Figure (tube, protein in one colour):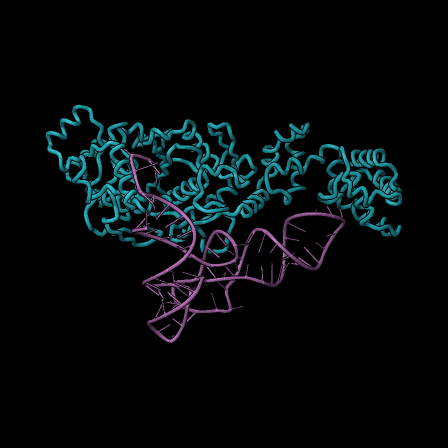
Length: 512
RNA sequence: GGCCGAUUCGUCUAACGGUUAGGACAUCAGAUUCUCAAUCUGGUAAUAGGAGUUCGAUUCUCCUAUCGGCUACCA
């Protein structure tokens, strides 16, 4: 409508469980869009289904967004000019609007019981048809359209349960525009009379609450999942019925995230049955199970966000690594794809590797401190950071640094069998003793000077470098993989290096 | 079943009528190395099918197929 309007977007989850990565992505795109346009990002809790409310879910949602670095301008905790932001606390607002539609002829009371409707559905099914509460049947059911005003009032007054249904116009083409999908046209013939308000719990359904709140909260753009596309015509019609077309938000329907294996869209219930998380943070459902989270699995929030942003959106360039600020400036709805995305755990790992490399060593050291303590390692952050620096490119997950650096602080308590079999030979061990003497003669071990010296010595004596170096590695490190052996020795120091050689000879003997 | 949406390498995607159909992950080879990673170089690999429109279709139209969503007094 009016492009000068302040950009205000909302993320409106229902607290029916943990937020899965699809939800996080929707929140992220809303956030990026808001920040890019200097607008507002609102968190609204859509808890109009009292049946499905899950305790702890709200808090989980907010914790997750916080971890992701998505900050909220207005919300249930932040407050704001349109508070409250929890729909259950706004229940008094909705009835007025529902009645407005009844008055202007766009909605009506319906008194059918759930049993009545179930019966109708069963009947239709028996005839191979699908029951639809629409123009064809609304006049033959118990509605204010065919009951006298007195009778309607009487039923309401005596406490009969009722709902307010939208009166879907007949045979009209609704013309809609979606920022991602373009123009969409649909005939109302295929739509039914959706319930807008229920007397039973004095709450609106999603459709009413959503439109009323978006209007009241001055939402300019609705960015939501594709599962809402079928209700878009209803929403358009509701804006018209209220006379709010001039401020109707623009819509953008995001492609769905698909299950990595099998079929269907990703769901909360998928938990971690695929061997990787679908939730940002660990989630403890009521059944006592624990569903793992990206945070606990060792992902950095930066990597998680980076990965998620590129799932369904591309920058139009070949850039792949984005900070949140990069994303804010590069994001655009035009580059959001139309088709659903199946996400690739391998790629997620790659993003994390990339991000681990650019993360400050001390910060990583702080993160693995508890893990080191559990291993009995109590090194300073500075010392741990130095060890991490040597392992920088070798980790996929944060906690990898803990295990990767374990031997930097603890002597090997076992020796890799393969390495021992391959290198722990009489010849090698006797040369290792010579090497030990050489190292002992150094004031300290410095890779830049010690390594060339050792190399020259090996050459002079005609020794085989591979054999000797790997024997040294076996003694010092215990396993075959790891960084340069000279860097390890330098890190642990001369005395410790010599002690480890002695320990290895004492443990493994003189070789065979 | 009905309605809506989608369809480019195994996966995420680029190419908005003219490209040897590009990149990334994965994969495979080679290089490098004291080991293992990392890194570097190179390779394999895609326009769902069929009709049109056009000088020319990945791109536009239609049909079919497949996938997905919705079809609740759930969101």
